Length: 225
Image 1: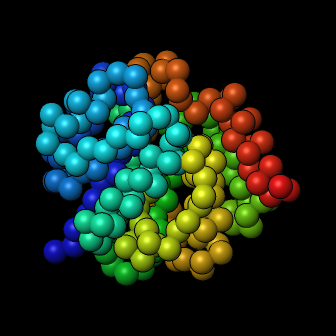
Image 2: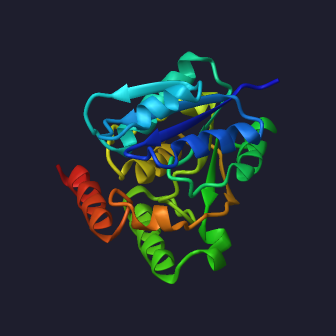
């Protein structure tokens, strides 16, 4: 049996992280790593109370830093497959099996969960924003994918060990695409469902227009610096 580790970065998700953990567990996944990215609320304490491996960054470093920390922990636990998913409840754990299937079948090193393959579920403005993100990711890194901004992904042990983005913020997701290209990793895309809850759509630390512009600036700066 392959060991599948689920990595969940969180930042001020105390209201929902307990439910997210139990939802993942209800779908049969017991190896859960929660990384609290310097939250000001009780996210870390709640995760600890739910009997998972809970790690805490002392300061808020960014989504990329939290994801990388969780993947490092999964590697130390000898996970065969690492799945990353958001901690706000938008990602449906029912999609995990589809994400890991190509890796378990040794057909892919990385599997990207794509919301745009289910674009009827996605608000129009998000479709436009993601399409713009896809274009610039292709322009900068030379690989066109349908959803470069999705954090719902699966990695083989080899990919989890070799990918090194050196990015701590939201640009992490795009730079994984660069790593796929540069390391010639096999990849696949599978459709995933997104639950656009009132909580997820109104939280302050979501990836919105302003964060999107900042992410694009960082991507450009890294290319020319």
